[in-house]
Amino acid sequence: MSKKSRLLYFVMGLFTTLLLLPLLYALGVPSYADVLTAIFGDGSIIWATSFSLILLLLITIGMGKIIKR
Image (cartoon, rainbow, N blue to C red; front, top):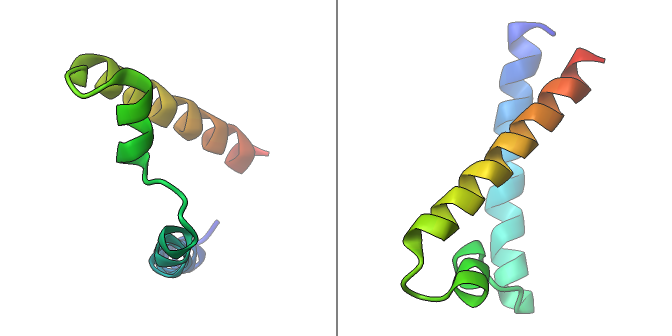
């Protein structure tokens, strides 16, 4: 994958996020912070952070496996 195509994918991802998040908010889909609060409660910062880091790690590993194919 060339440097130019990686930059293009990065920019496309940013624009998709900028367009998709307001649409989801307008449709009433809760934010990630609201979901974490609903699952773990207000005072559980350690569990919410651990869950988020594990989720991020799984996504990163999955993307790495997809890119290597």
